[in-house]
Length: 237
Image (cartoon, rainbow, N blue to C red):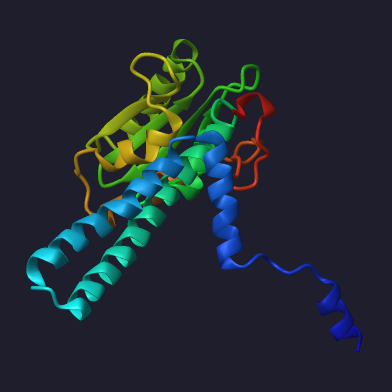
């Protein structure tokens, strides 16, 4: 009986549709164009398939219906893809500029075989500026968090450390921010994937393990989870 009572009193997790609705509402608050892009992504395949149906079906009602159903399914898929990308961008906009934001992207936003760590490899305790590292097919990437005028020296120091250990591996320096030449936070993962591939998958793991074995632990708070962070009132539209 106790088990039944506990299970009954525990809050239920929202269903899939409710979760999607919550994601849509959050995205719409931070990105007013998301709903219109989703609507366009939903209607465009329907219009295309309806035109093809009228052209190719020769008046067969069943064939036209199949084309329309295919268009609806394709439209739903495209709308969900748009929602996912816009929701990710909206989530990152909430933590943009906060210490640990780059670590959050490296922890949850990397794809394409990239390996990142939410803990920085270097940090300025006074200004909270930090340098993070990612390893992938494009080599080693050092990413600064903070104004470039303050973090450039930190980037150069870390680049020299990597070059001493792995002199033949390409090292790319990226500054995350909104100044000229910076990469915006929500574009960081895509920027890494666009780098020219110079390492194989086994080499990526070997390089990552080599660098991790030499990295001393730092007493720095972990990165921010963009799915749990509270929105800032000042950024609400």
